[in-house]
Length: 71
Image 1 (tube, rainbow, N blue to C red):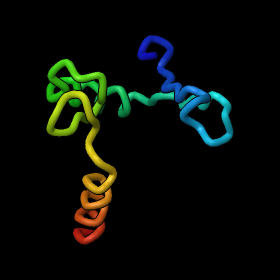
Image 2 (cartoon, rainbow, N blue to C red):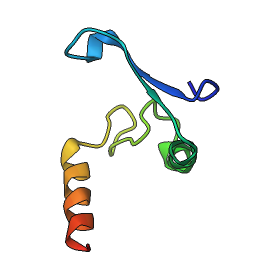
Image 3 (spheres, helix red, strand yellow):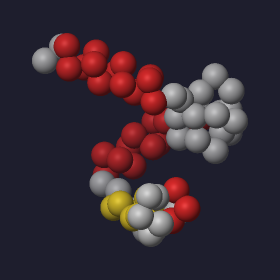
Image 4 (tube, rainbow, N blue to C red):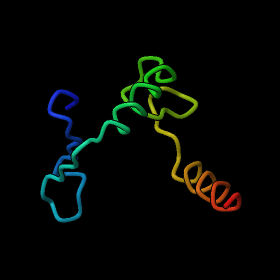
């Protein structure tokens, strides 16, 4: 919810079976705005090769490793 500046994970997607809410900072909003350029109508913030699937967790793991190597 961009207006309320809160990211909500539905209870069905959380192990505790309770809704999880995370406040969004200004930087989060900036990243979401930048990501909207590449979304191309996908429901996912970071779509995979097909708009109906998200990027895999491996993509993010490799990115973290790359960034970690540069420090």
